[in-house]
Image (cartoon, rainbow, N blue to C red; front, side, top):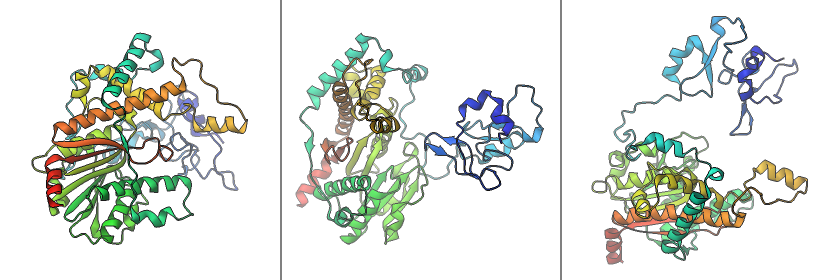
Length: 448
């Protein structure tokens, strides 16, 4: 039943992965044949009549092989997002409504690239760094970067990260619920630990806005709001910031809807001083659970951008995904450069960080197949370092990037530190960044 010009008549067909699709009794496909790599399954949309694909994934019409196709049937890749196609005669209209288009916001708290960092002078050169491959580096550069990382780690980070052991009573019931699986329990343990830190540091207080950056589905915010409600704290609220509109949000389950406000915004564009919700309280607490790479730096830029008009009294960020850091947004550039780390070496370090959490480096499917065949995981012979050495260096790279963030916070009037907030068997990304304004900390001590 291969139609769609026999799936683009070869050529671009190599970009599509064909798999068995669900069919009705009459043999017609009921689900799109397009394979979604990120989700590792077929698209679940209904295919067009007489086609294997839905409207979004119908292949672009080939312009070769002298195939005569009616004008109204010609499809082209969308210029804004080539992952989907559109009829050529509908292209002008489509560009006005495509979800990939750049929308110009009239909201006062949305300012394009407000927290993105200064534009790079040699952007093309920096773009070329992203194409670097560790196995292609010369030995001198490869081992030279590792030597610098080890020196900085031993000098500034080694033996300074304390293990915390806090939990919050509001999560006792869900943690004791045997219906939750292992993965769900791990997230609950992390949420409980983060709320326990807030309670220990006396941050669950009245007249406070708790701003969760990169809130996602809002599990942390949900339990935080529940804790605030249980303590009957007056004029306290939780504000969730996320650039996506997700389904099945946990914050929808909060009984008191006035406690929770959700703002759809990219952190890179968020101007905190213009958020009307924050004008209702006197204090601000910024928090996040697993805020990926550059998003951590964007958040720090956001909370520090207007320190004189909109102060953030306390910061709690559970760190992760350092491989997604970018030189433009990274807040610790000054410290790194003073330590002798160049932009090129920063990119190399951001590639090495993956060693700390990648395990064997094999995909989940590959490991599962080997386990089923009772094959032993063999050490790769094309690596310059053993797996244990790579894990250690990757971990040190992570902490060096985090230390640069600490130095930036300290230069802006904060007392900042790194802590282990859960054991590594819960998550390998078990480090939290904590920061408190020095003048605020002094006032808290005077009030005790």
